[in-house]
Image 1: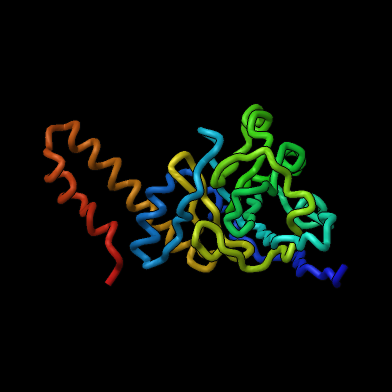
Image 2: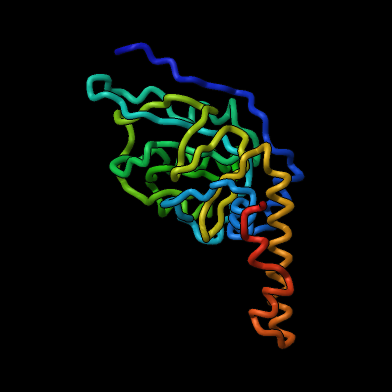
Length: 236
């Protein structure tokens, strides 16, 4: 076997807890509109909610897997070997498995461990297994799908808390991750405050539009009154 030296960074800068809690009150469409207003592409395409009604908000712990050569069989490590050392309650595990759909990198034992540690959820650019047990645990998990086949002897960790790509989006350790039944997205940690402010404006405008329509305005009139489309457009 060749040398095996994954990059493991144990300490990261996280988004402040008060900002995390404020994002918890918002939907992914509201935050997506705010991202567009700030010219930020943050929507992870092809990654969907696998446990309905299980919302997820928190800073990212990133994991990058790479395929293991058939000549080097024997999975050396997985994220479970590091969770107790690195993850904090409220973190989101974000896994870049290269979009692989022929074997898995997450299952019910990792889910049980994550719940024990207070992890907020998991995002996978790839697939996972033990879906029935994870459904029973109501754990927030977002992925491309499910598959029974193990990743043992097929993958290895290449880095933890390194930049990764999931659903076409670059995610860095500590970035805000938000997931609900509509989808999952990333907010750059250094832009979280301004994106939060704009997302709150969108959410408020939508509430006011619904109330205005209830009171008799047409949808066109209500949207114009509360500048709805301007709130969705990029700032000049």
